[in-house]
Length: 290
Ligand SMILES: Nc1nc(=O)c2c([nH]1)NC[C@@H]1CN(c3ccc(C(=O)N[C@@H](CCC(=O)O)C(=O)O)cc3)C=[N+]21
Image 1: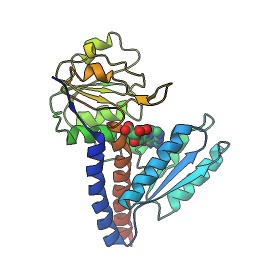
Image 2: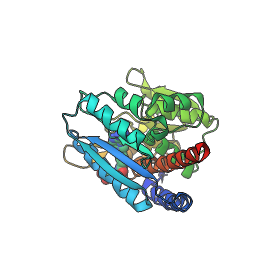
Image 3: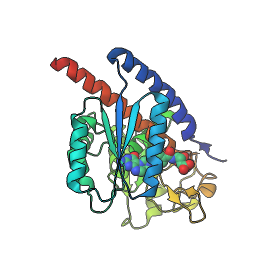
Image 4: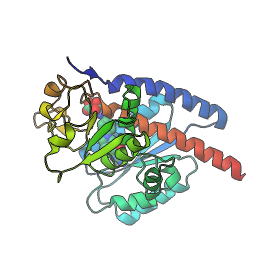
């Protein structure tokens, strides 16, 4: 038996249609489009690709988006000033700062400066705190993309054992909290977990978010399990692979996400979804205080 493929491209196309309609409703009510600004500090080549991909999807669904490109030598103070200006700009509803930043700029600075109501990538302490408390909040978009795939793939979570490989602040940690909200039993494994396979073999749903090419092998997967691959590993010969040994694991798993074409295509769509939500929230708040 081979696994059902959870196709992120198809799901993303469906979500984009829904978001397009949502943007039209917003525009009819408020007379302007939701606004998004991507801040990119030059340095990391891949992040330029992601910025362009976000601009493209924004254009497709009708969100007004622009890229603010800052030079690699930008100081912490200059970045702070740029973010404060965006916080004060009423036409900007969502702000995303592309990671990774050059080493002299800290993610903390960004997380603590972006206005929580514009933090559509869920990196501020307010967003993280609300998520931890089980309150509504913006979510890191990759973690949100995994939840969207599970939902659209009709993968049941209540009472299921989900094993998450990786504990990053952008994927593993927030994802574990989102899964708990769905009443899953959650285990987080990481680089210091001994005998990883003894955990992964127990998983009804296995999520790999480690960043090590093809490290999840067939013998680590329980027959019939759902396997979600968040990994993006560039190959020296070009192309990319996930954290899962796809060819071998798809013979064992019940359902599996490919790389590319799995979690990736949904990530930016979820970012835009949260930007539209941010625009609604800000417009309604403004209406109340008038
Ligand atoms: N502040 C911040 N937030 C992020 O959410 C963020 C970030 N920085 N920096 C970079 C990572 C990575 N990321 C992806 C987005 C889309 C695809 C995507 O669309 N991938 C496709 C296409 C891949 C291809 O064909 O090259 C796929 O997997 O099929 C992947 C990865 C968001 N990230």
